[in-house]
Length: 127
Image (cartoon, rainbow, N blue to C red; front, side, top):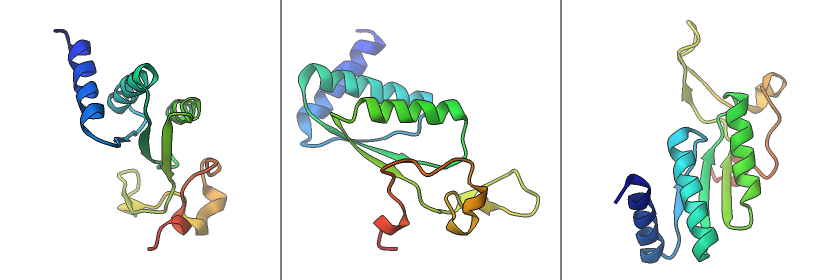
């Protein structure tokens, strides 16, 4: 059995064992491969899956495009939870601050890009 066959077998077992599957998708290579493999499985055998994406606002534009494409082109089989909240994120790009907050309302004029459509914001959570 090769690596791809082993991946397909594990995904088959997971979808066979659990009523509902959730995947954390960063837009990176590892989670991208796993999301594509799960989408392939669902398209072949049926079903749905939840996808959680923590959107950090600032990332490579190609990563954002990839995330947008994967989530929108598979909307028919994915329940998407794209979270855009001002959570505390460590940073090493400043000598003056050790953290920053993406999607911070008070700094909306500095946002790198607009808030994605259908994103879950802080109003969606009982903080």
